[in-house]
Length: 277
Image (cartoon, one colour):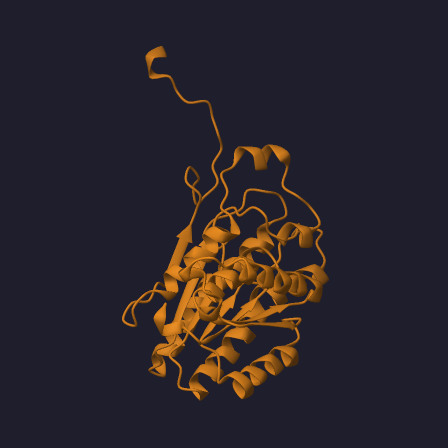
């Protein structure tokens, strides 16, 4: 992580869940973090917790003087001008962006038979188009400041498999789009001889995130109690793993699932007892 120390990372959806955990890990590794979230209260809560964490630092590895600086920025990422304003500020005040972690996303039930265009647009605006805008602005900032940076998209196994639940296929479509667009970014970057890396991290089930609150529903208790799940900290660790690669190595796709689970959901038939045959 030495190559990123004192560099600047923009993390979207930084106020909670994977975004907050990623912010904490980057700061501990000496990276400055510009945390974006539409909920200013969440950013303030995170900032306060970081202050408490700094006060309680006890070891050399927790030396607060080696930590990055946190810059909370309230920003609605579907507002293109608001996103551009943040990147302009980072360029002018901090010398450009080294890392972008596109984490913000939503999930909701929206049937293809009776869903609304409003919901579908909201899905695509946040999960796809906002990520494209942030990635474009990151490329411009990195190029302008001669930074061989890293763009990380927090994708989902839903971008590599079909969610079995009713009215979740628009979510699958949005995440599959991210899988395709990551490869598109790598293609276009190669055409301009850029050394900027692009990584898609696709977690399986993750507990303790805000994504279901946005969707205004929770998975059934039967599903939650029976499934293995990752924590936001597990995904944050994978962000660090991709950033620790040497310049010649690029992790294009990293699918991370909890032990005991699968990428594609399967039914659970009764195991066959061969001794009965």
